[in-house]
Image 1 (cartoon, rainbow, N blue to C red):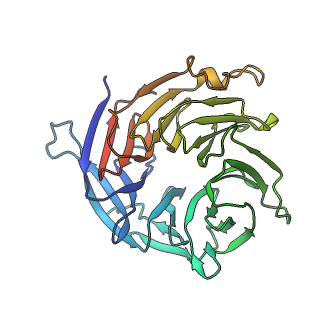
Image 2 (cartoon, rainbow, N blue to C red):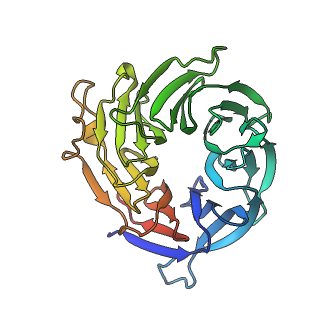
Length: 341
């Protein structure tokens, strides 16, 4: 089957989009978080066909939860709860009913003024989740560890960088990796009292922001980071001083990356240049540490475009089986169907 693309105008710039997982059926429900609006919101949607015999699916809004500030990240904390970070420095833990998706989102916890410079609030730029814990980073150079089960702050690390932090990823229960505006990558042991990283390294060449970080799902020593110039860098944490590969990828900044949940050799990326790309990472990640793809060489990589290049930034992607959701600054949501995985 060929790739099928369905786009719908939703009258909001969408910054984050996430499928709501279902255990036994193909999911049709998803979250969105908006930005750059007079009043932003987290919404719950479902896909439905107007006529049963039609293959076209249209998104329908089920509920709306309004927020003060731009939505900067949405991450699942379990199958019915999400952590949402905002540009006003807050993080909220929201719950959706497992049985009635049309029910309004319920606020479980709110962490106010997590990120601030002196008395002024600043953006919580990114967060990640791991077994009920939440890590947040922001423009104030701070790393916070939140307990999503009790609603308290278990650890704060201050003065971590000389500039704002823009990306974060859990490596394991007690370790997180952060990337800042100048491309410095640092690993923190959140169980230690020290405010010093256990390891640090950076993008080669000119200083560029690390916009997103992902960990390989089956090889946890492999870390990928996307940059504001569009390149992808790969590190093997067993020898992390320099990246094992740096791939010239998108023509503008990488906004989000996701390994396919059921195929660890497939990576989906999107960018400010309006692209959504499908990467076959097998040739990169199955080699030994001393035989990775050379720097700036992606000739051996199998890369394909999933949608025609848009005229606006694609901010976010999320894949579930053969279906990929993406959303852009053109105020549209796209459903890509029949993805081979």
